[in-house]
Length: 163
Image 1 (cartoon, helix red, strand yellow):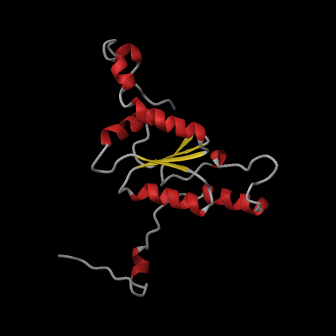
Image 2 (image 1 turned 90 degrees about the vertical axis):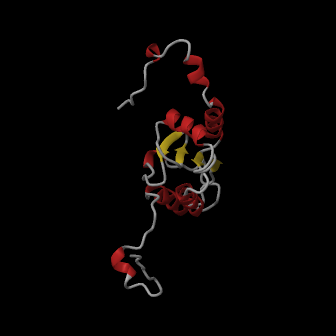
Image 3 (image 1 turned 30 degrees about the vertical axis):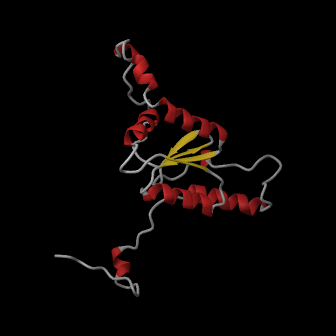
């Protein structure tokens, strides 16, 4: 389903160039990284979800490019240009082979999972290594939280309440 974008015919000609150039440098930087790298993660400081996405990639042995733009306290207007460009409302933005697959809470799509180069894999792990990488990419990147029922049974883990 195509997303709704204001048609250019409904934008006054006096402001079209201003809209097209609004923080175009940050969008161009991300586009260049996507063209040059198989996996790109776009994030921001102080947000734990880009870190989780990167940790999953590193645990799976997948090389990726990470771009970080500001924090909750800075560069939000520049990051907004990325949100408007992609239509994705949160960070991280994860791109695999040029395809935006979502963020840290989304299952990574099997059809965009990294594939080995022709002639076999480069790390010498064979089919088992390839299967391990694909299995990691087919799992969702989610927060691992201890369920409330397990907290009372976990030694050393206490919950406190303030009144």
